[in-house]
Amino acid sequence: MIQLKHTDKKIEEIAEKVITGNRITKEDGLYLYNNAELGLLSVLADNVRRRINGTNTYFNKNIHIEPTNICIYSCDFCSYKRKMNEEGSWESSKEEILEKVKQANEKNITEVHIVGGVHPKWNLEYFGDIISDIKKINNNIHIKAFTAVELEHMIKKSGYSIDQGLKKLKEYGLDSIPGGGAEIFDNEVREKICDQKTTSDMWIDMHRRAHKAGIPSNATMLYGHIENYNNRVNHLNTLRELQDETSGFNTFIPLKYKKANNSMSHLGEVSVIEDLKNYAISRIFLDNIPHIKAYWPMIGKNTTQLSLAFGVDDVDGTIDDSTKIYSMAGAEDQNPKMTTNQLIEMIQKAGYKAVERDTIYNIIKEY
Image 1 (cartoon, helix red, strand yellow):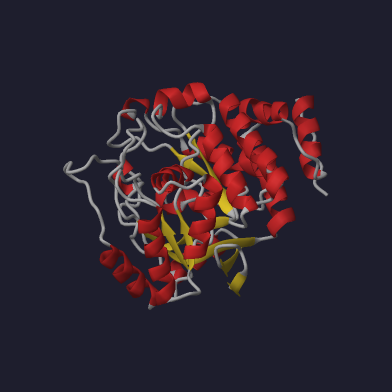
Image 2: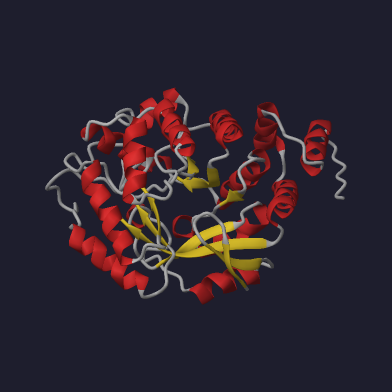
């Protein structure tokens, strides 16, 4: 067992909790953010990831479908949104979407990830038809689709309750939901960065109801803007409490605020050191969420590789240049695509075992 001696007795106490598999408190999490050295956080987070996942580092074969970037909301941090008929806006037809899936199906993808803007006209039935048509192409493709924000709008537009809408989407073929739209749960911060958007309580309730309906989900946190460490810890604690209740989260994905082409650009971006700190503390704190994902199109391949030593055990998937959400915000990878071999090489060169998974972490192949 790892034994750590530290001049800071509080750090030593927290480290002892982590190493012995005991839950840390919110106060402990905040103390780590403010006082722990990066090297120690790496040791502790890697200890947790190895206890839960060994050296397995997961990826999948997937594509992203972004039906539209037309959105009824105008979040300050968003570089992706456009209004109807605004330059740079798009609406993909059902036929265009299905053609992308057909092409990707020939590459043996296992997941279609569908997210986009909150379109003012499209309702649950519109998206339900797309889901069912994808299943006709390949019924085994896992459809992970629609943030809580998108779900709330389409369900209301079709006149259903949340429970009715989720049940209906599951009948169409929805398998799980992604974690986007959580941003940061603190209401004062949300008022400043996304005051029009769905509330934190709605996001939490949507995921709770999805879990109870047998629809697993992911969770996210947007960091590196105007939030503080206390906001982050409270956000993580809310997720941990919901996971205690439902056990419905598959993975947690910290999402870095990117500065290009939005109204918060003056803030700049946090450093790679801050990224790694955030991954590590997320892994340490979220003792009941099995996986921590580094979304490589957002932070780049090099930082993703580094993150594997800071608690991360998932790097997302091949993607095949099918997402614009972060490239439009100035991400390092402007044309995000990686082959299976490239993903395997990235993982193995960092000293971990590459494992292809499906969306809910059934192992397909170990390398």
